[in-house]
Image 1 (cartoon, rainbow, N blue to C red):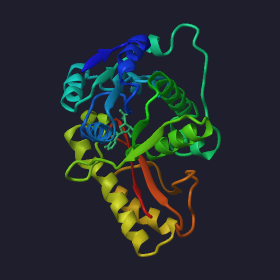
Image 2 (image 1 turned 180 degrees about the horizontal axis):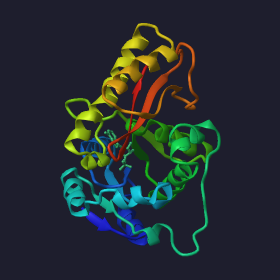
Image 3 (image 1 turned 90 degrees about the horizontal axis):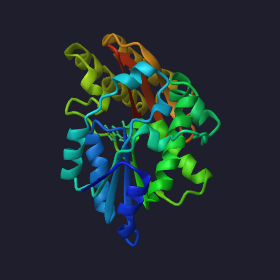
Length: 279
Ligand code: AMP
């Protein structure tokens, strides 16, 4: 595995691989089984796998959240090496945003303004789209892998590459969960044992919501049944809603198209998100 920290070293390392297919997995590090699944898929589909580890300040609305974000570089390198990553790209903030940097790549509309966009602020998805565009320009991969765990981000990235005609295939990977259903997340290490028990309520609520959907219930009834479970776990949701999987507009009647039940909540001091596809 080659470890590179600069764009020029990255391009140099990639040069001999340009004749084959390049798979790219962008992450913020603190790697877990979810990330490893993305890497596994990338390894299956491509001749070479590039992993980026970059905690992107531009997508954090809360400086305390950015400061507390777990950073486990040595461990991440070991995981990446075991997962068969050929190029490990861990740039500094100055490398990505040098002095004088002033570009922003942003989408408009409900897809970036609702739910995560509303709760983390409008700058959140602009930070995501700016850094993803930069990473795609730096690496120029054939395929890039994103988790369904961050369903809205996945849709935003799909819209980004469609709008800008970026020549890359976006591959979505189902959410990897702990055996009890909790979605894997880098933030889970910050959960206390009590938080960890409470966090189970998120997936339980989503499962209950899906059961209601399967009975033909309306979006309102689906949300109400999921909310009962959150109450049981004493979780106050930031949002809990049925959304159209394409544009993240809220669905109010009986979900007819590919709908997703999404939830975000503060569990103890840790903000968690999860979702389940209904249809
Ligand atoms: P992050 O490091 O949290 O920014 O995540 C990097 C990528 O891994 C994103 O595309 C996430 O959606 C994906 N990811 C994070 N957690 C999971 C999970 N539990 N299952 C599948 N993919 C995940």
